[in-house]
Length: 431
Ligand SMILES: NC(=O)c1ccc[n+]([C@@H]2O[C@H](COP(=O)([O-])OP(=O)(O)OC[C@H]3O[C@@H](n4cnc5c(N)ncnc54)[C@H](O)[C@@H]3O)[C@@H](O)[C@H]2O)c1
Ligand SMILES: [Zn+2]
Image (cartoon, rainbow, N blue to C red; front, side, top):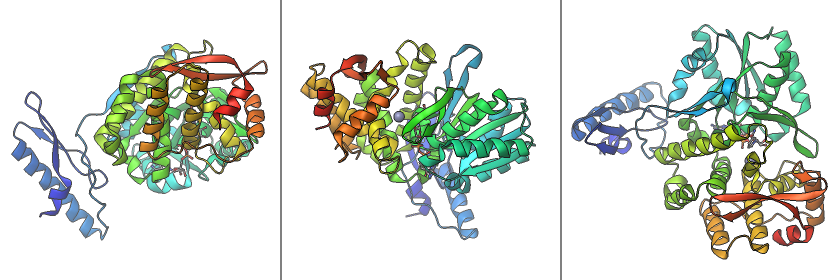
């Protein structure tokens, strides 16, 4: 078998538009289209053969073949917020177009890239070069990977370095990384010189479907997650599914928790789509992932458009599972559980609480648990002191004058904010 045969596959055939083909993410992306499937396939094989040859010449190891992606133009999800409106461009291989993406949306000439060590090596360094080639003045500022970096100390250090580098209102801040980098960089952008233009290239699934959309930025205080922050909308978000190829499996799954959340709170049909595509999602199928990310961004954008500053209570639906999750994360001192893992367990607890209060039936609870488990997410409550967890929840922002509030479902695709939840019921839900 020819090497390229393992990478090439026609993944979508359309009589009307011609034949779309997928190629090998990680090795080469893109594809071609025409009206003859055989010819298109041959053309794609040719491109891949050439790419394999280049890898050989460079002495680089070939990446393993992965499921092909549909060759398609990136899509735009518009977040409509009057003068703060912006585009989320979602595609495959579209990082190559970062410079024009920024150029279309900003007159600035200086880019402060904020990233973490891991993402710097993988992507940010190269993206910085792309911007330099496009005649931007570029400064790359690198923090340690991990939740601990969302700190006041780091913000202070970044402000000072930005001052030294001559950052002013002609500068943009570009976050390249996961939710930690996005939240920290956004906070620094919102506060330096009373606010700089902010752009995001989210590189984790969680950041692509959640944290890069909606403008919540911030840092942690010891024992109080996301306690200091702002609403600061980006000018644009560029999402490339290709970067998920390097994401550790555990991080990928953590992102899937937020994906499941959208189905539960807003879109029963999407929940069913996820159930039907578990195998493809577990196999990192790029075509399915692109659809998943597009749907999640649209759903979040719809909520943010109606309640940008979390005033009407609508935006609070996004906190489903999060009151529990924040307590687990805090009790674990931000170390033991990933945010998405805590959210998965938090959703399990929230559904149990809703069941206990007779708001949902057994089938709901069973379907949600089954999907989380099928996506290899945890659902067992960690062995933390239950009273301590409740104490932490009381310190959480979702407390209304001392009473615990929870976002709880009534059916798939619909949740409500429930006030005055009894502590006994909360304890029972954690088992
Ligand atoms: N602002 C919001 O609306 C919002 C919403 C949800 C979550 N959050 C926040 O997001 C944070 C969690 O974000 P996260 O899950 O993205 O974690 P993260 O930013 O810590 O990234 C996870 C790890 O993956 C690495 N990484 C990132 N991209 C990679 C890639 N493409 N390949 C290989 N490694 C890569 C990072 O270096 C890091 O070690 C939490 O602080 C949470 O509070 C914010
Ligand atoms: Zn979250």
